Amino acid sequence: MTVLPETGYVATDEDRASLEAWFAEYDARSAKREVERMAEMAVFPLNLISDDSAGNGRAAQWSREQFVATMTQVMGEGDEELAFESTRTPVFLSPAMAVVFTDSVMTLGGETQRLRYADILIRREGAWAFQTMIQGGWGDNL
Image (tube, rainbow, N blue to C red; front, side, top):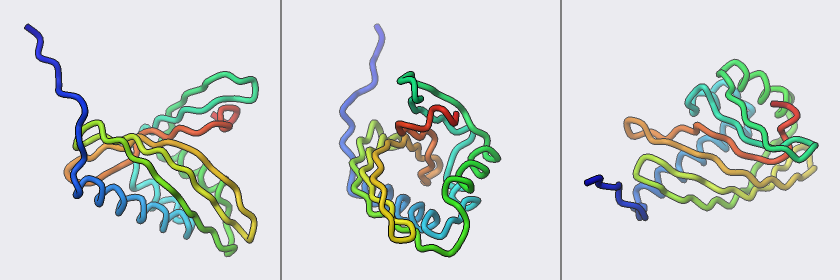
C-alpha cells in the first residue's frame, strides 16, 4: 500500500512572518540595486519561466553569473530612486515550499510600471531562497 503525503498544508504565523521578512530584505536589496546580494538569496541554477513574443512558453536555467549580468542590465545603474510597492499572496505547499504571487508597482525616476509575477521559494536550514521566477514577457531574452 502506498501512503501519499498529506496535502493542504496550513501555514503557521511563523511561516508567513519569515516569508514576509525575506521579501522585505529582497525588496530592500533590489531598491539599492545590490544585485550580488540579491543573488545570495537564490538557489542556482535558477529556473525561469516566461513566454515569448510569438506566444510560446519558454523555460531556462540561469547560473549565478547569468542572473547577476541580466539583473544588472535590467535594473540599471545610477542613483535614480527605485521603489517597489507589492501585494503578495503566498501559497504554502509545505513548511519548506511556497509559491508566491505578486502584484507590484515599480517606480524608477518618477515613472511607474506594473508587474505581475510568481516565485517559487524553498526553505533550507531555516532560511528562504527563491528557486524559480515566473513572469510573462521575458521569453525572448531567455
